[in-house]
Amino acid sequence: MSEDAINILVYSDDAATRQQVIEGVGLRPAKDLPTVKWHEAATPWGAVDGLKQHSPALLILDGETQKSGGMSVAREIRDRFDDVPPIVILTARPQDAWLAEWAGAAEVVTAPLDPLDLQQRVSTALRSAR
Image (tube, rainbow, N blue to C red):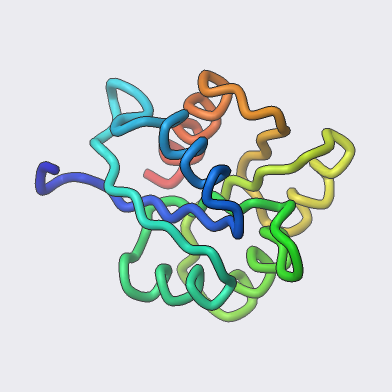
């Protein structure tokens, strides 16, 4: 990884979902963006800890995670921290987009995850933070 790589944290209790996101976005979401160093969290505490340790440029949170879904984690992070990076929330249903936006999502991606849509939304969220 080059020195200008950006950190992205992906939170899901499902390792397959985390892997699908990482593979879908890849090492560089767009030509005009730096390479990505991925960090994974399977618990809400891991997500908060990852935010503190890695200062990610973007959070990708799975809204379908059991017990503490990505939307509740997004609200908790927004309530606890002053400088919060853009958040992309993954949802199973398009009807949940309004709830994800209420939770603070800059972008919402609906399952099934389309790698091109995921790359585009991640890129848009990263550019908005510049």
